[in-house]
Amino acid sequence: MLWENHPLTLIMWLAVFFRLIAVVFAKGWGMLDDHFLIIEVAQSWADGYDSGRWLPWTPGNEGPSGHSLFYTGLHYLLFAFFNLIRFTDPQAKMFVVRLLHAALSLLTVYYGYRIAERLSDMRTARLVGLLLAVFWFMPWLSVRNLAEVVPIPLLLMSTWMMLRKKDDSKAVKAFIFAGLIAGLVFSVRYQTIIYAGGMGLVLLFQYRFRQALLFGVSYFFMAALIQGGIDMYIWGRPFAELTEYFRYNAENANNYITGAWYKYLLLLLGIFIPPVSVFLFAGSFKNIKKHLIIFLPTMLFLLFHSIFPNKQERFIITIVPSFIIIGIVGWQQLVTEKSWLKRYRKFIRYSWIFFWVINTFLLFAVSTMYSKKARVEAMTYLHRYNQVQSILLENTNAYGVNIVPRFYLGQWVDTYNVTLSEPLDRLSPEVFTPQHEPRFFLFFRPEHLEERVAKMKEYFPDITFETVSEPGNVDKFLRWINPNNKNEAIYIYRNKKYFPDKME
Image 1 (cartoon, rainbow, N blue to C red):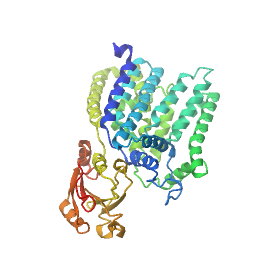
Image 2: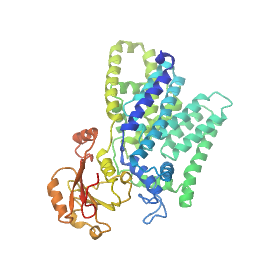
Image 3: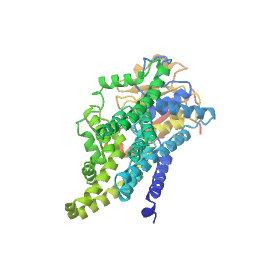
Image 4: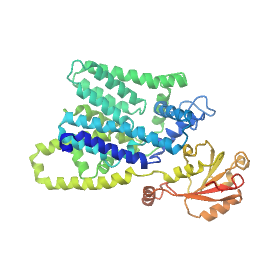
C-alpha cells in the first residue's frame, strides 16, 4: 500500500495536485506587499520605468527605501527575459510566476517530512508531511509573492542539512551549505536572521563550536555578498537598504497594526482549528532538548514578533511549518507516553475528524480563491486598449485612496484619486489637458453611483458606461463580514473623446 510503504511519494503528489489547483485558480494577490512591492516594481524596471521610485537615478527618489532589492530583482530578471522573447500577456506571466513559487514550496513538504522522520518516526512524518501538503492555506500561500513565505523551504533545507550531518565528522560541507542557504534567505526577509540565530545558538549550547563557526561564517558571507553587494552596486555603500529598513521600522513601529503580546498565540490557536491547535501547542513543548534545533529558532521568532509592536498577521507565517513539525512530533510522543491521555481517546479522535472536515472545506475554498479579482480584472480588461494615458479612480464613498495594479494593464499610466477628502473640484488642472485627461474612470462600489456619475459628467461630459468588474465569491464574503474590506465592485466608464467605440 502506497501510504504504508511509500508515504512521501503520495504526500508529494498530493502537494503537487493542490498547488497546481492554486496555480490555475488562485490569481490576484493576497496583501498589497506581494504584488506592489514585488511584481509591480519588477515589471516597471523591466519596462524602463520605476513605479516605486526605489532607484537612485529615478527623479523624485529620496534615497534607500528600506526594501531588499534581491527578491524583487529576481522577478526583474524574469520579466526582462519575458520582454526579450515578447511574452507580454500579464495573466500568462503571473501563471509562470505562480508555477515557479509552487515548485519551490514543494521543498517545504519534502524537508518537513524528512525532519519529522529524523526527530520521530515514519508514522509521525506522514502526518507532518500531509499537513504541510494540504493544510488549508498552504497551497494558496505557496503561489503568493510574499517575502514571509519564500524563505520557508530554504530554512527547512538548512535545518535538514544540520540535522542530517550533526554526528558526522566530515560534515564540513553540510554546515557550510546550511549557512549559505540561510544567509541567502536573509536577503529575502531580514527577520529570518532571528531564526538563523536560533540555529546557531543551538550549536553553541551543544558545544559544537566548529560547526557553529562554519555555519555562522557561511551565513554572514552570503548575506554580505548578496545584500551588501547589491546595495554597494546600487547605492555605492553596503547594506544601505538594510540600515534604512531598521531606521524606518524603529521610528514607525507603532504606526501600523498593533496588538497585545499574545496576538500571535491566539492567531496560531485559531488557524490550526481548535482543539487540534491546543494539541500542537502542548506537543511543541514536549522533549524540547531533542527538538532544540527547530524548537529554539521557531520560538525566538515568535517571541520577537510578539514583543515588537507592529503585528501584521503575515509576519508569523514563516514559522507555521516549523510549528507544525514540532507540534505534531511532540503531540505524537505525548499520546504514546502519557497513559492518562488514553481516557480521552474518543475526544482526540473526534477532534481530528473535526479538524480534517473543516480543513478540507477551507482547502478547496482558499486554494481556488481569486483574491482582489475586481481590481485585477478591471486592469486586465483595459489591457486591450492602447495609449490609455491616465485613469481616474472615483470612490467618494470613502476617504482612503485606491490603488490599481498597473502590471495587468501593461501600461504605466497616471492615476488620479477622487475621494471624500479629495473631491472633484480639487483635481489638478493638468487632468483637463489632452495629454493627462483620463481615458477611463473607475467607480468603486455601487452606492449613489448615478449621482456620482452625473457629478463626474459635469467635468468630463463624454464618459459612457463600459463594463463592471465584480469581486470573486470569497472577496464578496470577506466584504460581507467586514464592510471596510476594499474588495468592491468596480464600474468602468470610457471617455468617448479618446475612445469613441468600445473595443471587443
